[in-house]
Length: 202
Ligand SMILES: C[S@@+](CC[C@H](N)C(=O)[O-])C[C@H]1O[C@@H](n2cnc3c(N)ncnc32)[C@H](O)[C@@H]1O
Image 1: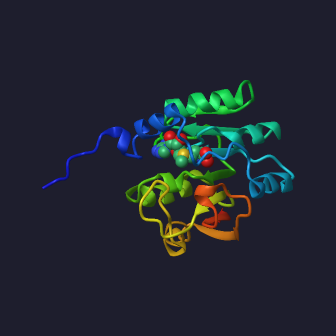
Image 2 (image 1 turned 180 degrees about the horizontal axis):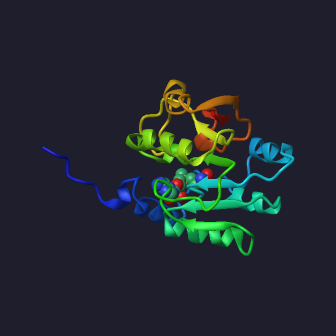
């Protein structure tokens, strides 16, 4: 017999789950700032990268990229999250989109997909689709960079991913350029977060 379906606000694959949390101000994943490895990554680039931030939430990083004049699309499927991002971004030059990552299409080729607390927000049944989608969206040489919640935490979100599970998702299409511990994690991710940079193979 099929299990009864939970209400939409208890299912993280549904925008209502996130709207409820943003609406109530219960956002323990929200750093309220840009983390150091990302800031260093941006500072080290000599050219702006056309960047997608899927599941952008409050969009602190999009604001940072706009400050550096990088073209950036901040995307979230929760209208309440998008409203929070709009407040953070005010009149900054960011393409802020309310859309589902799995259906959205870029108008121009992407150079970078930035990851933070998005993959770990997705139920595990969506992980294979995430791996396919990041590979589809990036041309050869394109980068996937960000923070990954690497641990064995089963219950989520955040859903922990094991190194071998992440490799299975990405190694068919990407090579890993950087994988290092994170010094400035917020409490929910502390000690279990890795800064990683992956490059799309040709
Ligand atoms: C844990 S929050 C992280 C927000 C932000 N990245 C941060 O670091 O603060 C996950 C976000 O992903 C969004 N999200 C989940 N599934 C999505 C999907 N399929 N398409 C677009 N956004 C999605 C949620 O609405 C939520 O804002």
